[in-house]
Length: 255
Image (tube, rainbow, N blue to C red):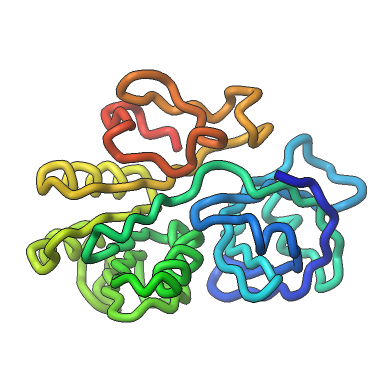
């Protein structure tokens, strides 16, 4: 993990309230794994107390891409920064997805902005010549976000594109097509909870990437704990990626 100063290479709006930002970092390009995240803030005076966590969307050469939705004051400030602006970045942080070649099908389930870390994962699976497939759900066609994965299945709540209904239902309707699948999921808590249940009932290994409010990003402040089956877990240090069987899915959805 390294704290460094970088400059924004590109920054564009790609969907309503969703932005794609990139910066160059030789260190992160060499060290980061799919599912890990960075903690960042603009350099100079920062009117907020804490940095903000962002999953790594993609790495192209030495450029690191961050996809984020404007959801509060921090991301609103970030969205106003122009190309060339300086950022204070700390990372890579957390644990990423574990990729095992023993599985025949690597199934990526994403809901909404939960798609953000999945392009990096899909790219890594492609590099490893593993069979990947994306199931992506959002509210409607206007909210579709870009992700380059062959054979993707789109599900929309309003039926304006692809399967009409939840992405978990689209996944369940095709579950028997796969021989020895593994699932990687990221999205809202209800989606992850249902994904974990489907995988448990069908004896499918499943990894989930959780979101949480984070302060330090390294497990020191204990501000992002979730209830695990055996103990409380810090999302920033022990996650954000967990085996779905580690999580107590009956806890109140606060993430």
